Image (cartoon, rainbow, N blue to C red):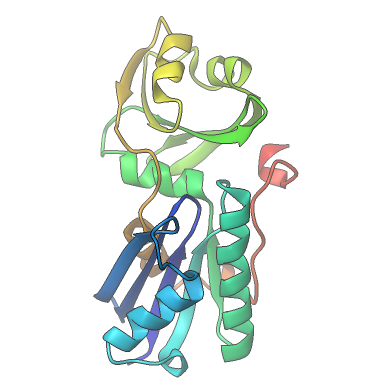
Length: 216
């Protein structure tokens, strides 16, 4: 049976997950700061090898396209694109805000506000209901947070700056989900859920940045 490989590199924790059909075969997560860690390619190769497979067994790839640590995101996206090209298989790109919202949300719960550091006092943020983005913004933390969630009765918060977000929403019931970064297993679940939608899969994907259409 052909395999799906998912790749998560949007933070200092790099992860890969491997499935056969819809059955999870193996997954690993390791900090890129761990002594002896080489790169995401070696992590993927080791995961395949330990599962008794090779790259030739892969049928599809999925990767977190950010936002996040830009160097790490680019490393994962470049690796996924290169592997997809060499194997002639499709790749799925999913943004980290959506993945975080899916991981942090709960059925029937309040909207989820996901926030990631963009540097220079700016953030990437998205407001999600049931895992679907209503609004996504890039800009200063004190401006973007009230704009997205200041009129809501309640909101769940995920990502970095959760405490700062709560202070910026004094009239909103803020729930701290405790989720800071998405797991590779969340990405893998999304990949399997979108398996049958050909519009979601492409020959290559691009990192999500402040210049991307989603934030305009």
